[in-house]
Image (cartoon, rainbow, N blue to C red; front, side):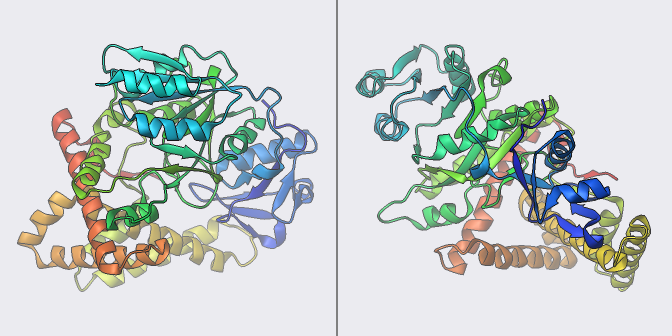
Length: 461
C-alpha cells in the first residue's frame, strides 16, 4: 500500500524543523524524529514529493505520526471515481429536495426512508430527482438506515450524506482525491453553517462553534489529536473498507465508532477543510440543548467499545502533578508547579541530546504541554465534570475560584479564536449552556451504563 509517485505532502503547521534541518518536532503525541542526510534532501522547504521508495516511506511515516498532511490540490483523482450517494432520512421532504438538488447527476442515489410518518412525500421527492427509494418498515436509526443503503452499493466509493446538508460543487471531487493514498478508507469535509436570512443567536454561535465543525486546518483523524473523530453528516469512503458498516446497536456516536474501528484496523481517515458541506443548524434553544445532550449520551456506548480512546482528558504524570498543585491553591502550589516545569524541561533537554538550541526547544515543548494540560482541566471543570464542580463550589472557596477562572478564561480565549458574529455575553452564555447540556448527556449515559469509564481521565507516559 505504498504512496504513489507524485503524491505531495506538506508538514503540518505544528511541525517544526529544528537542528538546522536535521530533525523534525511535532505530531500527536509530540515527538522528535531525526532525519538522515538522504531524508533531509527529500524535503523541499516544508513539502515532500514522493519520487521513489525512500520518499514514499518518509511521507508515509510523517502521515502516520500526524506531522504532515497531503496537499489535496496536487493529488490526482482516483482511477475509478464512481460513487453512490446514500441518504438516510425520516420525513424532511423539503430538506431532501434541497440536498438532492446539490448532489448533481451522473451518480446513483439511494434514499433510505427510515419509517417516515409520511413516506409518500419522501418517495415523491426521490422520484423527482431520479433517486432509488428504499423504504424501511421499522425505524432502525441512522446506523441501520445507512447500512441498508450500503448493502445496495456496487460502486468503488460510497457517499453518506444527511438530509440537512447542502453540498458545494467541488466537495465530493476534492474528497475523492485523498484516495490516491491507498491507506485512506474515509475522508470527510468541513461542516459549515447553512446561511439564513435572519439567524438566531444560537445559529450564530453554532456557525462559529458547531460540534460538527472540526476547524480550518487539514488533519488525520485519530484519537488523542485535535481532530479525534469525524462526523458522518457527510463522508466519502471506500465501499470495501466499511465491511459490515455502522454499529446498528448505536443510535448516537455511531460515526465516532466507525472512525475508531477503521483506525484500529490500520486505515487512515482524513479531514479536509478545503471541501465544505453546509449544515442546517438548529435555531431553537430547547431543540439545540436536546441535541447537545443526545451527543453526550454516546459516551458510555463508546466507552464499552473503545475504552482506550474515550477518556475526557489524557495527562502525563508530570502534567497531572502540575494541575493538582495549581488546583490546591496553597502557598506551596507555585513553587511545586515551578519545580515540576523545571524538572520536565531538564529531562526533555537531555532527551534531545545534541540538538541545536535544545534548552529553548525543551522549554517550548514543556510550555505547550502545560497549556494543553490546563485546557483539558478547564474542559473537565466546565463540561465533563460540571455536576461535581457545582457540588464543590457549594463547599469550597478554592473550587469556586478555580471554576470561575476556568469558565471566564475559556470564554475569553475561545471568543477571540472563533471570531463569532455574536456579542461576548451571549457567546459566553451559549458556551456554558453547550457544556452543561453535553456534560449532562455524558453523566446520563454513565448512570445508565453504571460505569465511570467515560468520565475518568487517563494518565499515560
